[in-house]
Length: 587
Ligand code: GLN
Image (cartoon, rainbow, N blue to C red; front, side):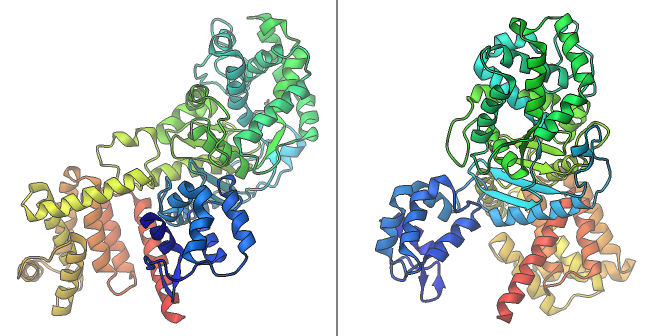
């Protein structure tokens, strides 16, 4: 019963004191429950909450007592418990969404690149369209911008057709016809491996051969019929959030401009030969019609999340692909999904991804989330400029690169929104605080730097007065969990003040930066974060970030080796927080 009461307390309105009703008094309402669900990132039409939603609808707007609540949530208790207790994979969903929005805005400014122009429908697509959709492996979703625009998926179809062939034919047969090596060549290159197999399923030659394998396994079905089957797979992958469509116009144009793809097909037939002697036209028709499937960024994000989740669709819980097939598919995407830019992409972004010439990029963060972007302007490799930029910016800010886990705790303070990391971080921070009081050498170093930082910032105007000492002592207590030693702040301030008198105004701050820069290699992310937080709180004690404070914070972050973008997020968070406080006190 206790746990149910705890859940109720999260949503109950007990005489205006939200979140405190552990007695089971008070009531809640449909609207409040909806708000809590939406705030966690879960959508109200989520399959996993359908019983609860039906029951809520039947209750209408009438107040919901604890007893009614207990009855209401029973059928989907585990899911609701995770939602209300913030136990989904990204617990702080709202914060994460704000960060994603700021990356979205920044990337929107990039208008470089050009639409694909080999067929009218792509040439004439609105180049300014820009959408980003994210879906976590728990089905938390955010969608920004043009996420509902249907576009042909083009080469994004390639890894999925490969996965389909793997499920149907098994890896051995497929491997006989299609390699898994990065090609280092443009996507439409005619070049093959020395044994005359195509390099991999993500370039045209490999995708055409993969289509051949699939087409050869359905002798009684024509290319369109097989495409329908593959569209069903896409639909399951994206949790059927919207219908998967087919663009006849794209298909006609693709066929009319397919000379290069025909050349590849003839080369394949003349070299290795086609699987089970399949008809060359049927093979090409299947390849081109897979390119002509139409979806939206919001659908592709859920599909990416299904891949991130080992083949189980997060919002329907259906096992759509076996985990083994997903593992192989992601490996191929990692090696070749971004064509002849795949090496650089892996270096910089370190995530399996696949682009298509209509402007889609689908990216997978294994075990965490999938995301899809849509923006038609392409770079010279045929990848969406903004799509790639978004991926790059994201891994600058978050520990999503596969090798970020190698950092030894020194990532430049990149964010990690994962629940497990959130808990670990809290534990590490409280360990650090505890260790200070027992004289741990490392913890003391962090503490000293943190004090230096606070004092140098406070002294920036040339003097330190009693109220400032009080602010510092309070900040220190909040961050470290205990009070500074008696007289310690006074003594340190006095030392620095003497220094100012001897060497001029900016001396202590410059010395601080120098000291931070020398020490930073020995500090882990937790230590760096504590120091930056102290600096932040002291600099912004009055609720605004003055230009010189902004400059100081940037200097400190730089000296500490904290990514510029991470500081940017921190500042944006602070400003959001201040704005929210202002609107609360205004109302
Ligand atoms: N339809 C395009 C082609 O076959 C697909 C290429 C792509 O998206 N890179 O050339």
